[in-house]
Length: 191
Image (tube, rainbow, N blue to C red):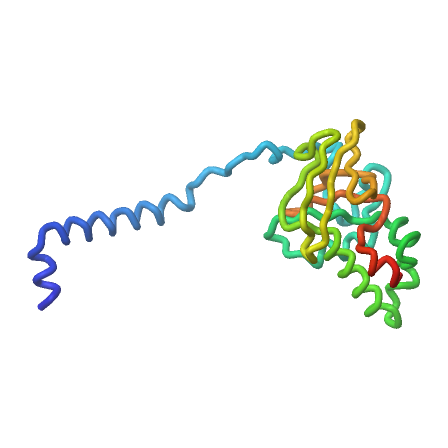
């Protein structure tokens, strides 16, 4: 009975027809949306490449760097300041041949995930976003303050650690390979 009264009201009928038509249009048009291009959508082959198994400007990202990237979700935007393989060995004393054995796996995984917490930011930060001589502050996912600046030669400096390579994309993740490990003082003393 209420349905019959609803159809007797011409305004309600018109609003219902308009709502149904709008929903149909939205459903049909969602699949036909164009891809939005941003200023960073184009891949520069000199700066960007696939991370896994590819030689990045003469140096590989390293097994520990790959581990860090794999710990992050693929569909969310992150920036990770990944230590180079040499920095992992020099600063944290972890080596691929020794630290990835079953006896040391738990400690290595815990160390790499802790470094990930200090050195990843939940947004994309490209080198072009940081002005030369300017300092920009970000909070890492662990709450550690990261102070990012850029030198004249384009090298990013994060908490006094210089970058080796910048703006490497892996899905939604932007990777900057660093010549050191970003960590807080407490973690540094424990290492």
